[in-house]
Image (tube, rainbow, N blue to C red; front, side):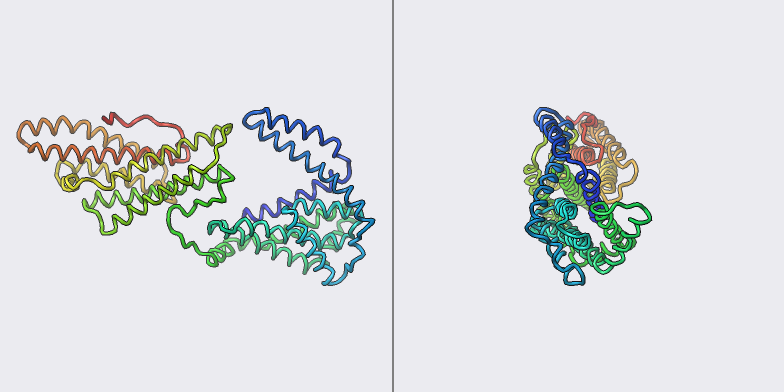
Amino acid sequence: GVVMGASLGTTGTGWLVSVLGLKVSVGFYALPVVGIGAFMRLLGRGRWRSLGLALAGFGLIFIGIEGLQEAMQGLSGVFRLSELPSGGLPGHLVAMAIGILLTVVMQSSSAAIATILTALHTGSVNFEQAASLVIGAAVGTTVTGALAAIGGSVPAKRTALAHILFNLSTGLIALLLLPLFLAGITWSQIHLGLEAGATSLAAFHTAFIGVGVIVFLPGVHRFSRWIERILPERDSSPTHHLDGSLLHAPPVALEATRRALQETARELVESLGQLINTRDPHLDAETRRSRIAASIERIQQFFARIPAIGEDEPLSQLRVGQMHAIDHLVRLLSRLEPPHSVRQILGHPRMQPALALGRDTLSAAEAGLGPSPPEGWLAQVATHATALADLRRNERPSVLDATSGGVFPPAVALEILDAMRWLDRIGYHTWRLCHYLHPNGSDPAPEAGDRS
């Protein structure tokens, strides 16, 4: 869906150029905009810096268009593409090939479209050839996506493949129905007052991309499932989201880290739940622990490579929250190997209330860290963790009093207290981990009772 929306949205460049950039010599007036934007970028803070960069880039677009106009006017006297055969399939294919090459060289379909519109405006090409050039530019932009996906993750390759197939299919539709599109443009010029030239070309670009969206959108679910079958996900580890190509976009990279942390935390919480329920590690417990430890190490390495953006306060808070999550995840992993004495004492009747609260904490956390978290799951985790902390704090003097009265041998009492402390730490780190992985959990929350 995003790929189709992006393809349709890029046609807005053509309208911007044809309606404004080709009719008024805006290059001179754009220079102050570039200057203001540059000063805002250098001297501003926070969003003002981003606004300055946007203003400077916006102004440079029109300065570039003016440069293209001057170049095309000189080129039209030397080389006229309009003199090449424009009728028939061979002529359209030649023009499409030129449009593809233009986009590949410029690495931007928007720049290629602006060049084609300028060429049409200066008479270097006729309208029919310009239409074929635009189709070629729409197809050529898939090369950029394909190059970006090389060495990327499976989701990145799927997105690139979806982009390629959509644009190729749309270009084929436009080529096959080109006479109908040209007839529709002519009808619109006569009956709807559509301006001839660059504006009509922008309308043609939007029209054939829009038809492609109309064709693909009803079957987008089947289309995406088909792409997933072509490129299956072979890496089932929680860190398969961590793609080095995401590092140039810190918000996206942090979201990938959050997902990896969430999946790793869910696997760890599930393993702890099995350990509490069976009071003995499974045969594959060591393998799972090694896999979780490897995931945490890869997350830490990826997280350390994410560039910092100091002026983005929400992003900085998100980074700090994920650092807390990694810390609690590491500490929780250490609880996956309790001493043998702790595992043995978990079956003691005195441990049953604490075990029940530990199970409830881990169960609520596992549900909340899943793909469809229930409403209010974080509050449930906090409630169970707090109750577990209160129980441990209240049981300590009670167990010691019972030991002094001869109810428990001192060794058993110490094992009970160690096991309760082990469960309490599991509950605490689970709650804090869930807090920082929650969408609204970047801020610190109060401690759940005295942890001493």
